[in-house]
Length: 253
Image 1 (tube, rainbow, N blue to C red):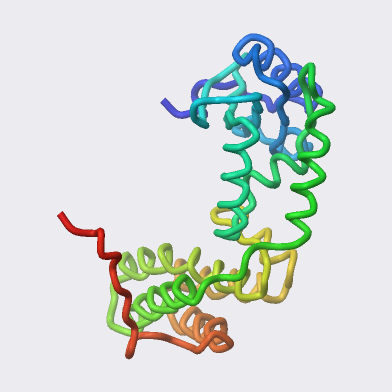
Image 2 (image 1 turned 45 degrees about the vertical axis):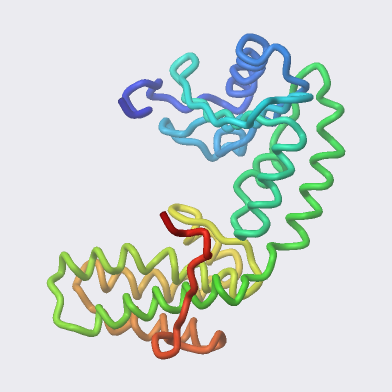
């Protein structure tokens, strides 16, 4: 069952969401040190389908976990950590350039008996957000170049509209990643892709929107192909000839 059919038909206010999170922390995670309450509801941007993001921090855990559940008709996504597991996931977010967990900590409201302990952690995360993501490695960039090249070559051929839509759906997030990370910026997928593009360059976001709308609505591939060529040009262009990726030696049965 999806969260759509489990929840209320009204989005809770930030105050109501905070009260729900505080109750969850007391009853479901009574031994936790503190938590951050975040997400679109807390920003005042929620819809009736929005959930509460809850980053729960313990003094020590055997292993981090992610849990999804519904409280008072409101879905909750809980990310349960201690400081060491949280640090590992923050480092991973920085390396991959997607600051999901960092944003939750930076913008979240601290709750819990030891909520004051959350502030040094928040300051550290805010600084890491300001510093930006780690640069893409050559291997990661070349993999994106190859995958985008492969998709572009597929679009150049005679394709049905259904095939073009499938190719475009695969191509869009990869091209967004090149556009954002290639400019040294954080990136995101889904609804965050157009938002982040618009933040750094409204004209770039508009080019993405026009190109992919043309592909999905009328099957026009040329604008997407041109966009891909333009975005890859600063990074060496399309890549097929000479691409080589060696598997780790331990990848064998």
